[in-house]
Image (cartoon, rainbow, N blue to C red; front, top):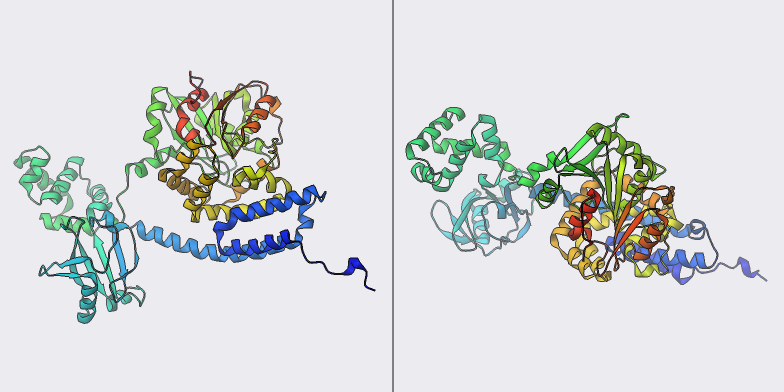
Length: 580
């Protein structure tokens, strides 16, 4: 008779379900939230059964995770390559549309809309006009014509109102494939408008043109008549002639046609015109070299001699977005003479990665930053999971600080009675990170990439779980989604290691006692927060010797996005009103 304990047993339904979900998520990364919930559930069941080592109990599942992640890695890498290629194409000031034999678009970038062609998408029945004869025809017709003659065709695109908008060049298959386009491309339509590129700016810099001379060139593009262009600039015709002669002399050209041809020939003509925000960003984004040779990046906005507020943002780095929307914050900072400095922790953005075993190890970098910038005293402001780093630095550097302000802090000592009520990141950090940190280290990079690839889907799930109307409004905003995606991509572009290590350190619990922080600490926390629940903030306030907790009725986790003025004022030691 075979002993009972030697008979192979079938894994329980929960383990089976988890294994299937692991492989499903490897093929569809939008299923990561469901996978995390299932894994969290399994860990909780093991804990309730008195089995305290999840790594041993779920060793088979861990092997499936490793295999599935290899599959996911290959799929995600292919998807990322496609996204990166699309981003490169869209960054050009040249509109490109690749079409098949029916004139149907296979691939196109978005530059056409910025190139004067006021259309959402090219359709195979959209009318195009032959530049030489004025003859009208559809895209499909001109593709057939170009491939019959084997010659490129100059065409004029019509805008939404039917008015001609920009010139286009249609390449037939023979020419397109010789340039490296795929064999399926029966035609390639190229549009170009120098006004939407960096060509004039680069040309003006190379030839030392003045702002007034550049303005005349822009006016000549609009009217092609010197008398009208001069009038548009509110100068006399004679003054306009004088300016034009100077332009010809500086650029070595002899006519307006020659001048515009030179501008269009600039390599920068293929680059999109930069927005003022993109031009100002380098002044906001700054680097210092630390004593050990590492680079530390920080964002600085406001008067250089203003009172310094050091900001520790959450994982995405977009809650107080001084890089993407400096004009939103600058009037407030200037009026109150404040300098707002966002810290890019090691391994984030362009800050060199440094392996740390404690959040307190960030403090020497911050002290060196303050020394290099000549900051004698400062306050800290932090949001969400950035509060761990901020409080660790407060613990270490309180002799140089005036106060610390926390918005929606997550306190590791708090254990929520029902994790299913909470947000995905709480489940990931608060449950998996505590019980199985090595699994968190594996999962987090894939989850971040999932958010980057399915940003809208991630936010939609977030909105569906939220119980706060203000959070729903904030998370539904296209600008919030766009900037979160952009900043998260930039933060993790060089490495995800910094974000992973900081999450592990937060999940395992802070290795400093907040009772040792003697500075005033002000906490703003929404009562409807389902990412870091309000009882956690109450517990933190109870453990801090000198704290003030503002409970914000009907606000959720993301109140800093809209209520930053009062929160920033509190950090500066200015009068403020708790958001209502």
